[in-house]
Amino acid sequence: MVGAWEEGASEEFAHAHWHRDWSPVASTAHVQWAWDPRGCFGGAPGQLVSFDFKGGEGWDVYPSLAEWI
Image (tube, rainbow, N blue to C red):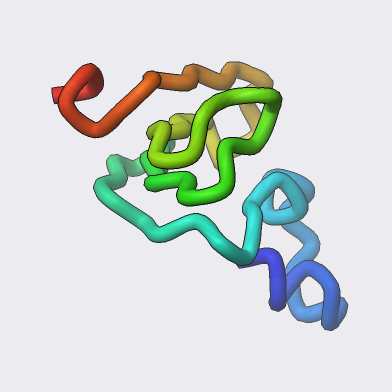
C-alpha cells in the first residue's frame, strides 16, 4: 500500500499510513491488522497495529500477537 501511495498509483490517503516493514496479519472490509517488527508509535518490536483503511482515523496497538488473539 505504501509503495502505491509513494508512486502516485493510489489516491487512498490511508495507504500513506502503512509502514514498509509491517506484515499483514488479517483484514476485513474496513480494518487491517499488521505485525510490526520495529515498534512504531513508540511501541515495542513485535506489536500488532490495527487501523481503518477506508478513511477512518482510528488506530489500535496491541503489545503482541498473543495480546491481540
